[in-house]
Amino acid sequence: MIKLYDLDDYSLSLGIRSLSSLTYDANQLENRLLDGSFHVQTIGEAAQYFEFEILANQNQVDKINLAHSISENIKLIIDSKEYTGIISEPKWNRITKRYKNESYRYFVSSMRFDVIEEGTV
Image (spheres, rainbow, N blue to C red):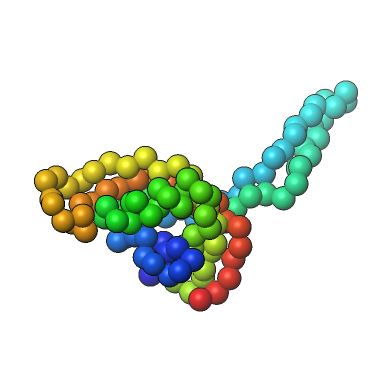
């Protein structure tokens, strides 16, 4: 199971696809020395993140947009692991048309989930 939740366990996704593996982003400074060799310096700890596409309805989109705007922590559940973090700005594409009921208006977006904490379910 792969799902996105807020910290109150409200489901923020109908589905997640194209989930990347846990990726590391480090600040590195590369220098070439006088003898021609290279020296690589890593500054700080590497940030961990996932990238994925999310499917959500109108109500979930509103909550995700609010969580992003106030930098609220959210949870990403992947099988038995739970990751807490923040998301990048979502850019939504509507995939259904002309539904009056908000729960049947579906949107899709690619986003990045920056991991702050990792645990088990």
